[in-house]
Length: 93
Length: 169
View (cartoon, rainbow over the protein chains, first blue to last red):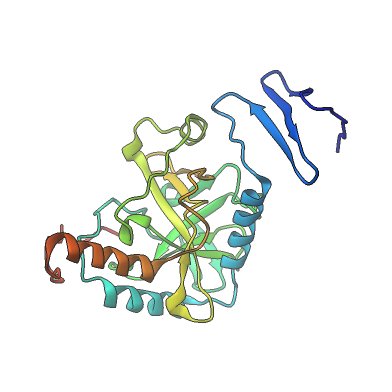
């Protein structure tokens, strides 16, 4: 990991297109400003970690085929409503 | 082609059914090839089965089935990565987590899986809209939708109302 010290208002360039600025420094928190092209997503790393964790939790090998039947039953008992949007679903195996 | 799976034994998959995640799925970045398996024609919940890890399969559901709106706001980068020529080519699935109380199953709307239905390229994208998170309670959202509908129309919908013919599986 590259560690750089910056003072208030100083900047870091990442590649040619991404700029990080120290916008505010408080006792417990700093504010960073990020200038990046729209195509680059910028988000707090907790989001990334959250999704990774959610994926890992979801990939529970104890879940078996029977579980989906149960889920379907639960779902259908509530499906009194609007039409499901009949999007083409992916082909099945 | 034949593949082994722990839940379904040996499955036969056509090349054209294989879904390719060029960047893998978060937490499972090395796994790129998957297939969507449906337990029956009318099954809202499906499996995203790995063709490289026999044990790995995610339960998935299309958000459109339990929510009226899901504003993904695909970024240019996402659209490029997926080779999307038209937003209608995009098929969206959410990964489902099932807790001990099955009826509290949740869908991850912050990291949906988007598949290019034409090319079968796929990606797990990160949605920046703060309205979406990783654990949306599916049944709860369906109930809210029913209530909202009831309020709007002033009457309960009957099960047959407006069904546009079954979804093709």
